[in-house]
Image (cartoon, rainbow, N blue to C red; front, side, top):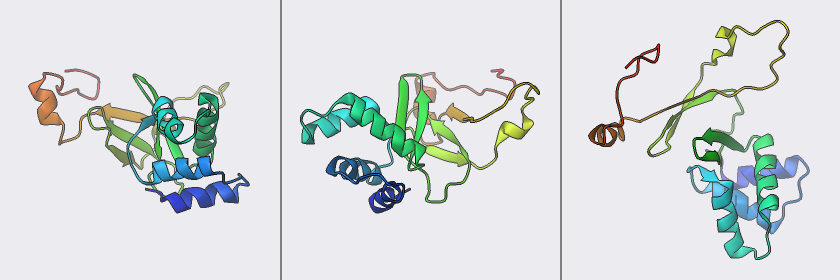
Length: 155
């Protein structure tokens, strides 16, 4: 997980002006590992900075993602952001618990197993696997939400 200081260093190295708002964003993500929606970040930032627009918050989240300090994952209820898994910017994917949102990196990339047509040029891809971690499985089984799913999607 990246520290607040590292996030600020990356932003500064890319020529971004390090405003008080950007320091607060870096601190927010540097001190926690939870996924946050843009709305949650906006609500948090709005407590300290009156008059801050949602567009400004979202634009900064996108810039931080493009710099590689944040990762964006699309959940069923929308996009959420989280501090990047590590300082080493290596290509990886995630397994994500739908209950607690803990993530586990997948070092293997399935793109080389994908049959890409000759007339299609891939410029970017994402691959996430959603399920329940070992800590959340007992709770989900009690609620009847967990069942074994085979490789072909069979139950």
